[in-house]
Amino acid sequence: MIEAYAWSYMMFYEEDFAFTRMFVAKIIALDTVMDDTYDAHATIEEYRQLNTAIQRERVENPEYLKKFYNKLLINFAEFEHQVSDNEKYKVSYTKQ
Image (tube, rainbow, N blue to C red; front, side, top):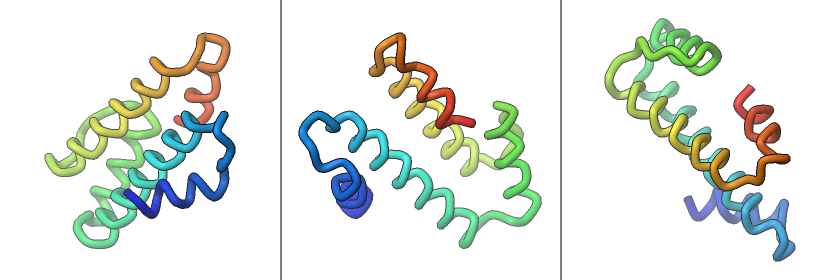
């Protein structure tokens, strides 16, 4: 998590970008977890199921992938809640 924050801090070091740093750090951390899960645990079929679930918002995965998928959705819901109404499109764009 520290490494993810450091990366986001290098990209957005100015004080005005505190929310952006947090957002990018969480995305990097989730991406790292997803990559490690794919490398160590997931079969090719489970990998495809998770990708389909993310793209279509369906949950038909093994339990350990459901937990990751639910955490991903929770983070995006938090992001949507924290941005102003005229910036919600940014979260939607990131989800795609």
